[in-house]
Amino acid sequence: MVGLDRKHWSTATPIRTLFRDALVSAGLDYFNPHSFRNTLVRLGETTCNNPEAFKAWSQNLGHEKVMATFLNYGEVAYQRQGEIIKGLATPQQAMQSGVNELAKAIAQEMCNNGLGMLA
Image 1 (cartoon, rainbow, N blue to C red):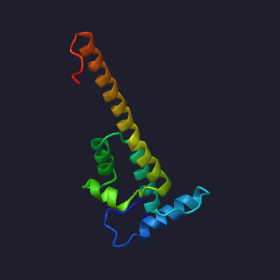
Image 2: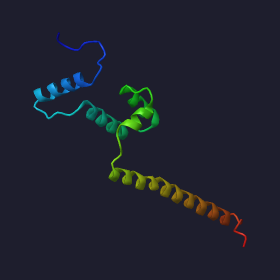
Image 3: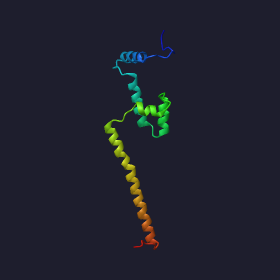
Image 4: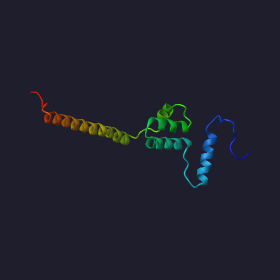
């Protein structure tokens, strides 16, 4: 028989064999099927810009629950983890700067209208 059989496999051996044969025939090194899913999850982590998009990505990988994707794939490398954590400070700094500017503008407006600060 040529092609894939519709029966469920009891082990992962048939899919590994398919991957091995396909990669070898293409002149590539063997990578197990899970390594491709890991790659797809990492791509989704960088491509999806909101939780709904990542949920759709997760469902497209065949996961009913997005937590399966988070718990089983795509561990964040330590260096990237540090970059992400450092990056989280940026919006807060920008927000604080905006709050300071707003406070200065309010104080200036109060002074301009004779409502100066009470000492």
